[in-house]
Length: 194
Image (cartoon, rainbow, N blue to C red; front, top):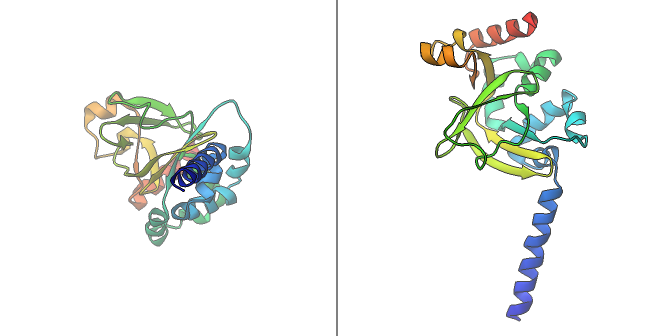
């Protein structure tokens, strides 16, 4: 009886591991109830079509959780505009696979799909400036998903009064949690300038 139990446990966990490795980043997001808002915005932005394609690279997605969208929507109407919504979602998607296993204390500068630079590093946890990574390293067949606790704002460092002059000089573009109307105005202006 015990051997039969072990067999079924192995079969169950083995099956789940195989299933998990077959799940795409889009599958991971759509099956996570805490990421349902982000999933809806990915769908309405048309970015799901790109994430579904078989491509020669992986994705890293910093997916804001439902609580992040709830707080953000209460304060700001940015997500109601299709153009801004799509660009904001692209700020959360990167080409490449960046997990806590392949990041270290050295800061790595990587690009988002919207062609903005992000600085990534890990101490005990993954850091993207002041963004909080709620759930890290959710592995998929075509990349990795990190659930975060806020909407990400990728900005020119010189516009962020929270940064020291050394950081501003070393990293011309940084990311943080979008927290004010002033940041939204600056973010919109940066899109128009491209």
